[in-house]
Length: 216
Length: 216
Image 1: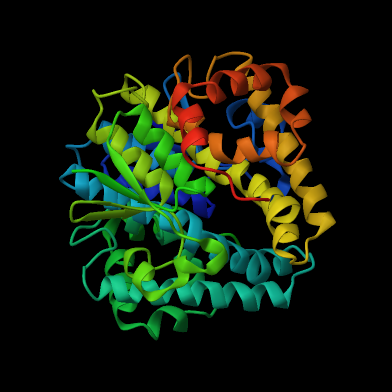
Image 2: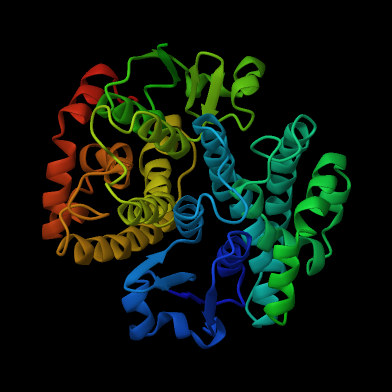
């Protein structure tokens, strides 16, 4: 059964797609134009009632929330493609910990940066320089903790690549390539090496090749 | 090995404690006074570098982020106490989905309500009526989607109690018992029945009996 992924041009769905490529799972994508509010239309809301992307359909199984989809496929195809969950239950615990750190500490400020530096100006909407400054400060403090962690282990959850690292790819890509804020990564030696490592994985390069970034 | 849980008087650690009770895992608690900023001191930051609660210690294994700890113990003791992950990998996927919904859709507005209705006034800090109004509107929309879901299944992930439900207990308890906003639950028939069900579990009653709420 080919997995259908909705919204491949956007960052949160790309988190799912890079996982499917790592896991060698066949998929197809269905374009959803958020600038035309296609994700707020009744047909879409039947699949994802909150009107958010991504959602996947796998036969008659529908699942949303990108990090839930990551866990589902990483578990279901544990022995196919790259193992993204760690070898032991304790390693898996640390994968979960750093995946939650990504969701609750890293994502909120980098999301605000994407919105106020890129999306709002692109759409001609008001943006707030105070939010930009505060978000950059918050993200900097998070990256200081990452720097300390990555001075001890090669990846966030340990010396193995996992969902915890993979989950950072789409938004950090915007930081490095669209926002001119790559110095936030480059001025931290271990974070910088980690970013070079994970962003050069063939899976992520393939995502960037297949699906264009929004035009901002 | 007895699990040590830091910060039992606060809501996010209570999410872990109710899970440990459901899983019949022995634990002890270590008091952390957030109003005295004990979670920002160097000794605590060695365990949890972001200065957040909870963190657990289990022998020489340390883990933080409440929802990561839930997953770790639910998996490690899959066949002990209440099964909180579902029986199949597809059920687990839905548990993950609704656990993420709790984290990303439910938690942000209810957290803002707790801060601006309870915590800031208690500490004599400024609070923002606009944040209160907007958060209540957002939470109401989320609860409308819960109402629809819970008209079809008894619990969020299906007809079985899981981490997805359990994760809602501590903050919804504040909504119902400290904020005088219980009408948000009571005016939605299925959400109301669900809340009565999950909040009357012996595990949650034991948490409330063992650990007092903050004084707000």
